[in-house]
Amino acid sequence: MSTDEKTNAPMSLALSEAEAAAGRGEVPVGAAIVSADGEILAKAGNRIMELKDPTAHAEVLAIRAAAERLGSERLIDCDLYVTLEPCAMCAGAISFARIRRLYYGAEDPKGGAVDHGPRFFRQPTCHHAPDVYGGLSEDPASQLLKRFFAARRS
Amino acid sequence: MSTDEKTNAPMSLALSEAEAAAGRGEVPVGAAIVSADGEILAKAGNRIMELKDPTAHAEVLAIRAAAERLGSERLIDCDLYVTLEPCAMCAGAISFARIRRLYYGAEDPKGGAVDHGPRFFRQPTCHHAPDVYGGLSEDPASQLLKRFFAARRS
Image (cartoon, each protein chain N blue to C red):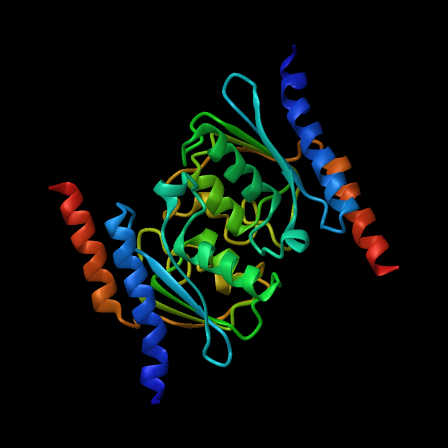
């Protein structure tokens, strides 16, 4: 398998989770977590409205599920794929979970906290920062969001 | 009841939750959420180690419990009391939950995200900021933390 394929399979899963979230009326964001040996440990989409839980972002749900599966609050050597640049809450969770690499799709200038706003991973108060790769599958990820918000406005 | 008593009763609960967390071997941080009419909606202490969940900070657990109780992902007109300055993850959760007022005890120069590091509520990417009151019951809150970390080192 080429490096591209390894990178894109989990992001495809994250995109499917984002699509499923849109079908539930949630902002379409999806995430997947992969272990060092390539196993999918968890995948999730936003469930904020469904669960009536303001913390039920795709990343938080995936991190909690992967931690439960591994029986550890630290996801050592695990990578997280998410369709949208994480917010401050999720960036904090990613740091506490010790995620190794973060791959994200669309940038989020309005609410992102990785390459916008607080740029959390670059703060001296951030004690673990993953390697960050933005723009992976950016087009389908941002198209999903654009269609969702356009349909909401109409 | 005086304003002081109204303010201090929930913080006393938060301090009790922090003490209970220390008894479980968790970093002693506790939180309580109060509705506009003074009802305690939720209280929680850290349960990161116990639940093997990197997101199980006192504030996140209390917010999730209060949201479940109200059947809403938004805790309109609710106030959050916490013994330690919230981190970026918790500050994000507080913002999403639309907490009205945040009262915190001890400052956290190393990991806080309210008055240190990202100062999340002052970022243009933060779409709801609570009124913030730091230093409430600062002494007992910081003493709890100091005793906990001193005992760990010895």
